[in-house]
Length: 72
Image 1 (cartoon, one colour):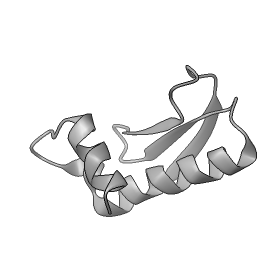
Image 2 (image 1 turned 60 degrees about the vertical axis):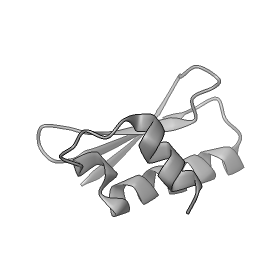
Image 3 (image 1 turned 90 degrees about the vertical axis):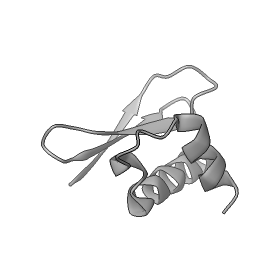
Protein backbone atom coordinates (compact mmCIF):
# COMPACT_ATOMS: atom_id res chain seq x y z
CA UNK A 1 0.00 0.00 0.00
CA UNK A 2 1.12 3.58 -0.63
CA UNK A 3 0.09 6.39 1.71
CA UNK A 4 0.46 9.99 0.54
CA UNK A 5 0.76 12.68 3.19
CA UNK A 6 0.81 16.45 2.67
CA UNK A 7 2.95 17.95 5.43
CA UNK A 8 4.82 21.13 6.22
CA UNK A 9 8.47 20.68 5.20
CA UNK A 10 11.39 23.08 4.72
CA UNK A 11 11.10 24.96 1.40
CA UNK A 12 14.09 23.09 -0.05
CA UNK A 13 12.42 19.69 0.48
CA UNK A 14 9.80 18.78 -2.11
CA UNK A 15 9.15 15.29 -0.77
CA UNK A 16 10.53 12.00 0.44
CA UNK A 17 9.39 8.42 0.90
CA UNK A 18 9.78 6.02 3.81
CA UNK A 19 9.00 2.33 3.98
CA UNK A 20 7.27 1.52 7.28
CA UNK A 21 7.42 -1.66 9.34
CA UNK A 22 4.24 -2.99 7.72
CA UNK A 23 5.74 -2.70 4.22
CA UNK A 24 3.73 0.40 3.28
CA UNK A 25 5.29 3.22 1.33
CA UNK A 26 4.68 6.58 2.97
CA UNK A 27 5.17 9.50 0.59
CA UNK A 28 5.54 12.84 2.35
CA UNK A 29 5.02 15.88 0.11
CA UNK A 30 5.61 19.50 1.00
CA UNK A 31 2.13 21.02 1.22
CA UNK A 32 3.53 24.51 0.56
CA UNK A 33 4.26 23.76 -3.10
CA UNK A 34 2.31 24.73 -6.18
CA UNK A 35 0.14 22.01 -7.72
CA UNK A 36 2.57 21.29 -10.58
CA UNK A 37 5.49 20.90 -8.17
CA UNK A 38 3.39 18.54 -6.05
CA UNK A 39 2.67 16.42 -9.13
CA UNK A 40 6.34 16.35 -10.09
CA UNK A 41 7.41 15.46 -6.55
CA UNK A 42 4.84 12.66 -6.40
CA UNK A 43 6.01 11.29 -9.76
CA UNK A 44 9.62 11.42 -8.56
CA UNK A 45 8.82 9.53 -5.35
CA UNK A 46 6.83 6.89 -7.24
CA UNK A 47 9.87 6.39 -9.50
CA UNK A 48 11.91 5.59 -6.38
CA UNK A 49 9.31 3.01 -5.32
CA UNK A 50 9.10 1.38 -8.76
CA UNK A 51 12.90 1.22 -9.01
CA UNK A 52 13.13 -0.47 -5.61
CA UNK A 53 15.36 2.27 -4.25
CA UNK A 54 13.93 1.93 -0.74
CA UNK A 55 14.71 -1.75 -0.63
CA UNK A 56 18.39 -1.62 -1.58
CA UNK A 57 20.22 -3.95 0.81
CA UNK A 58 23.39 -1.91 0.54
CA UNK A 59 21.80 1.09 2.20
CA UNK A 60 22.93 3.32 -0.67
CA UNK A 61 23.28 6.98 0.29
CA UNK A 62 20.32 9.20 -0.55
CA UNK A 63 22.54 11.48 -2.67
CA UNK A 64 23.54 8.55 -4.87
CA UNK A 65 19.95 7.41 -5.36
CA UNK A 66 18.86 10.97 -6.17
CA UNK A 67 21.67 11.24 -8.73
CA UNK A 68 20.47 8.07 -10.44
CA UNK A 69 16.84 9.26 -10.52
CA UNK A 70 17.76 12.68 -11.90
CA UNK A 71 19.97 11.27 -14.63
CA UNK A 72 17.49 8.75 -16.07
